[in-house]
Length: 77
Image 1 (cartoon, rainbow, N blue to C red):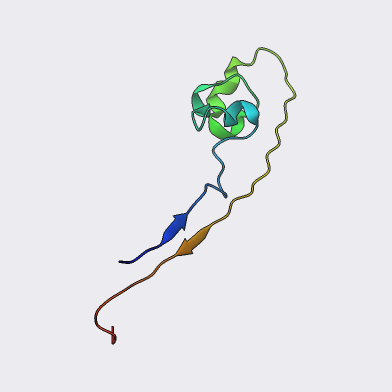
Image 2: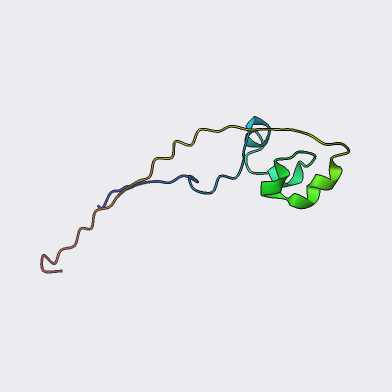
């Protein structure tokens, strides 16, 4: 029986920036009212009534690992 493990993460294109959006598990496009909307949905910037300075920080520690095994009864394959 072949066995293998596949680990994947969204390491290159993060779906959230900052703790407020990270807690929504990808539903940040509906939140609105933040400068971070430039990444998810720029149309929601209209909800800001006054100028705002906001920042976010996130450490990306994505680990991708792939192992595969192919077992066949034909050794010449």
